[in-house]
Image (spheres, rainbow, N blue to C red):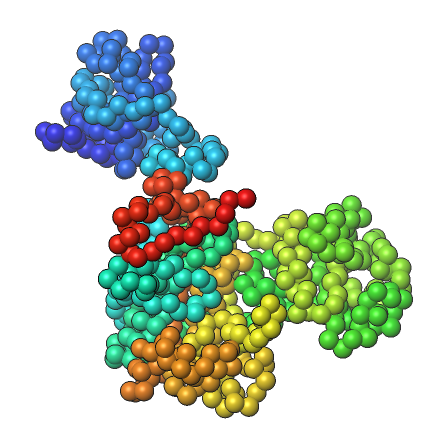
Length: 590
């Protein structure tokens, strides 16, 4: 017999009854039922119930067992007594009567429980991640992640893509975040950067004649901590030659849909994804990553307030750039609910959230209704398709400044009024992103998205249009309120690339210095190309039904970007700093 096991803890079935089995694993829990000891033995594959009674030669040793001890158990497989079977377990029809044991690894007192899924402080969980990963839900999340990657690879290869590995030590690139920099010992005073994404390399692969690339790519971004962001993450990275935007959509939509169908556990997944222009997404949903499970659609209702008795809105509308948007709230037509929404808005830093509610008989009620009168109130109700018992909430001003808050209000209404169907995955392509935006802090025009995207209209648009009106062949995948992926058709013409960066404040020489490899490649026959990248952790997070990226990552950092398990970041030794020709200058402690 094998030194440690003849079977795993998930393998034994009724067909094994009367056989002698050897199992090794962790003591999940021990139960004492009137002097009979039941040991749930767990390994990666499952749990097997093992039994010792006072007649068992190993009974005295089993009494010493504690949670998470690693033990070997030899015994006879037998049917569980009538009424004690457990159909929830694959091994639930049998048990192992213990004849011999060996303690392979005793465990100290546990700093966190492994049995059960009770809440526990995250910093303790991360410090003892090796214990946390033994817990069933987290263990399964990680296995799901691996299976998702397998599904991605299979589907990408079926689409004719080939997997490449691009460098980790590279040069800085303006991907929209800070780089992690790595000092060079061999080249004193110079630094590598960890890639924010393999953007330039995958484009260079297209220059090199490789037609369809993909990679499960590690990415590194030194951004300020956020709940939905990790400093190190992975993405399904894709690039294709001789393609239009439609070609990318046709290749990738079935891959992502198929991956979700593989792991959705029967939940519906969008078959034919709608394409929503950025401006429309902002206008209808207050988000460039709208949650389409929420059926609330915002509408402009400015005309109903122009010249009305509600002077706050009427005066705002004297400025042609200002508008009033309505957010319909089906079933929200009670004073208590409307006042609660108004208080929520104030908590979000807003002066409030105006509302109209429609009572029995269809009459509007509330301060706004009283000010604009029954005719205008009825017109708003008809435009929004509302009935008695419903309400509408209003935001006003410059849409450029309020659309994000309007989107938050839409989400809040959807959650409070149970208007979100949470048992489905709703996908959409968000298209026609603006090429540029105005950076208020630095008082300059800057890229609003990926700087390597092709502007709609090409070089001519860059030369003749107001930059803030130029749209890009840039697109995102939105799913259930998350940005799942981002991509674009690339700006592959050298003169257009230089002009695009010039508008954002980069001189031609700076472009050559920072992107010399790609700039040179564009001089020697660059094919039209495009691609995208989908966040692996966000995909797995949605499929596992969690909203925390750390719940689908093996060894993540905490929210302050500290690795509590390994103790990173840590101070370098004087010897290391000397070899790197570096002196540290940390800020003074306050």
